[in-house]
Length: 189
Image 1: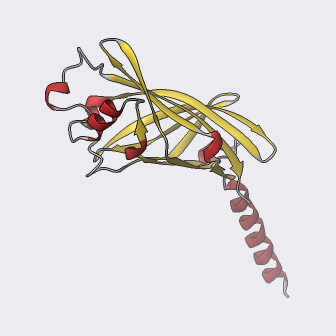
Image 2 (image 1 turned 60 degrees about the horizontal axis):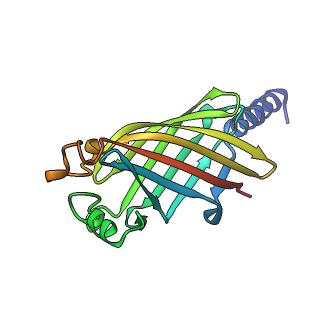
Image 3 (image 1 turned 45 degrees about the vertical axis):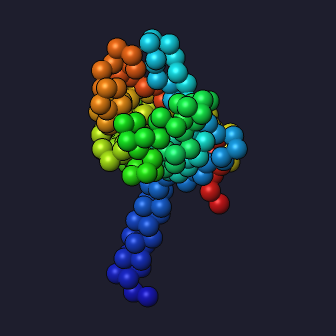
């Protein structure tokens, strides 16, 4: 190998190592230890619910969060508000419209550190056929190959067409829905 070839090979290897270092660690959700909740208000009283089926895929290297991504997929039909009547109502087209919009998704490729163990993922939430920019703040607690991300954010239900017709007004069902999550993750092999 001549000197030019050696320099070229060395440069390519160094570039490859630099690119490899820029990739975020991949994390997979552990469903049994993860929870995705939402709280609306009915006549100013909290009305909690939970999505029973969802998945989180996270790419995060805390020292370089800008190389990360967050992908969340939610089976909207798994929404449970602990009442058969309410569950039947939210399945209808005025609310979640399970028949036409069975999935909600959040995708973020912009993650930034907000505090030593806290981040904000900025991305797009697609819910009931509507896409909106959303910021999702979360705390991060990593230990070996396991981690927990936890956070809370507010969604304006009207922006996504959740609660149409007589439910558009916010005097009975409030405009804000608080989403809270605690997700247990394991580093992908």
